[in-house]
Length: 396
Image (cartoon, rainbow, N blue to C red; front, side, top):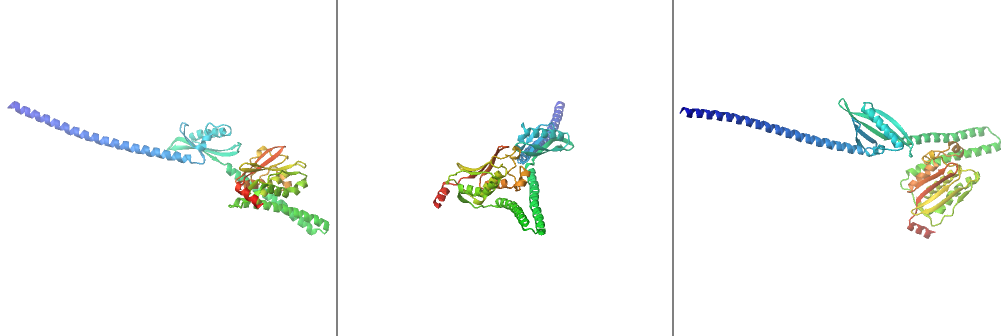
């Protein structure tokens, strides 16, 4: 009996211990489950954060790709982590772009050291470019984690500034000169009684008035061409355009002793154009050739069929154009030889008018020139369709 009681007591103790262990095990299992659930929640949060961060980086890179400026981003070690397509030209670059690449690397290195910087570069191409390179450090709290460089193209802004300066300088000078001359001539006439002298002064005044009229006409022509949204178009035989333009400068050519040669062009060479604008453009090319030719040297006007286009060429054997000026001669108010332009008149709008007329007709104007040998300007216009040619022949 005693043994049985001892056995029962021992069994109770074992069961109590087992129950205690079971409770403790259940508690630990619950704790582990809670910890696992918390770990899974952290993992899910981390994955969501990483996905958001990855999405944010993708959005940021896509935004950088769309920048019109070049963008280069590096980490703290100098490794490039982002470069948009505009800045690709400055990676492993050659010639002028290699200079820009060196400047970008230099400014990025300074920015990673905490020093923002900026520099303007003149690249002489061709084409000529003006670039502004700016770099700044990227910070996270008190630490510098990288640097970013931005390359902004200032070429167009500088060109517009140059055009504006040329406009103010040229128009002011060209208007001031004849206006001053007219004022002086009128004062002289008021005090003069000799009829012969008065006649000479009146002729001088007429010449200055004509000069003013030409300046104003050029400005108005250019303004009209630029503003014309729906220009008129007529189907016109090309020989008539050439001869009309040649007739306009015939007297000036004879006055300076320069032969004007107009090539024979087939009557079936037809263009659809604004007759007045195209004649004005050819006249400007001829007038320009006469101004920069020496007496006795011919100016040649020709045209030829080039398939879908007709090319009108004006060739002179004059002083030619320096290569440094070839890029700018079609800009408004730009003149290669300002001293010569003052004696021949004009404010540098003639070739700009030619370019605008060509562009308005879906064509182009180009130039080939060598100093001391002369220049050839080629004015290209789309050729008329066969139906238009047939209509012109029937009308004739």
